[in-house]
Length: 105
Image (cartoon, rainbow, N blue to C red):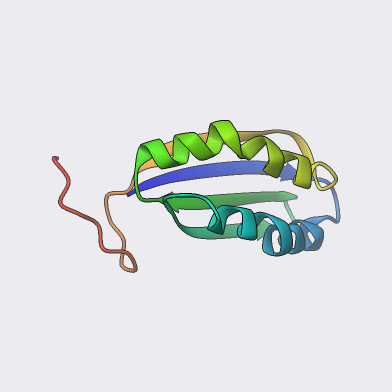
């Protein structure tokens, strides 16, 4: 399993709009992507920031999404975020919700 962590700076007062956009526009896009497993999002209205973590079956599924579909997601968020999101990728080593295969380390 593979994870993408996206950190964004929200425009002041836009945390509700961010959550609404994620629910109504972005999650349906993610669900249509090959290899997509789950999405978790965290919002801090006080700090005007959000973190979204998407889980994928394999690294290549997440990479294909990033190349082909992520630009569409950024366009959907244009009105609620400031600046360029920071994206980081990780291998998932533990989860209490998802069954993770034995890893080589």
